[in-house]
Amino acid sequence: MGFRGLAANPRLSRPGARGLSAGALFDALRLADIHQNLARNIVSLRQSQDLFDDLSPNPQDWNVAIRHELATRPKPYTSDSPAINRPFEEAIWIEAVAYPFQPPNWSTSRFSDGSFGIWYGADSIETTVHETAWHWRNGLLADAGFDREGVRIERKVVWVRGDAALVDFRPEIKRMPELVHPTSYAATQPIGKRLHREGFPGLVSRSARCDGHIFGILNPGVLSNPVQACWLSYRLESGRVAVEKETGVDWLEA
Image (cartoon, rainbow, N blue to C red):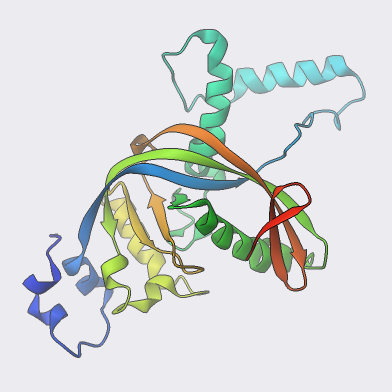
């Protein structure tokens, strides 16, 4: 399989060509060599909560549960940092990078049918907001019947370094608009599955929700150095999602 320029394939570049099949798409694809920070938007809490206080009223029982969790969970991250720093470093890595690659967390998305993990990031915080706000409102809230005024969720954005040669779908979107279809993933999931099966590190495409760019990473080894960027609060209001960076101050609407 090659990644040829469009002009090198007259079957694809001739004027008036109508769309691309998935096979023809792969004939035309190029690579984007990216070395940049990618924004990852995840559910989180501004104030930490004890995750075990609902199991028992006894703080000693909470400590037992915490020790058991630390002793039995898998170790997806290794570090050369001093031992005293590793728990914090590992927690950030799992939250910002490793989580979607762990089998219990695989889920269906634009480029995955749920049989493998994929990590999504974006070129800007704003792009992550438009993407996640749409999925929060039209997915989680709608499915649960909670899409009503005043519903809130807290999130945070982490910058993660990405260094990889990614398959670049952006030049082909005009001829294969299914790549950014607003609701159907019928065309894109088989493409993502092929990239995963053949060992590609990931892809870059245009967001289906705004003019930004999204990155789908299939190999966590090309990601590094997660650093927190900001906290966000989403609130459903007047049929839109109002987004706050500072508590009580609307920053963006999605």
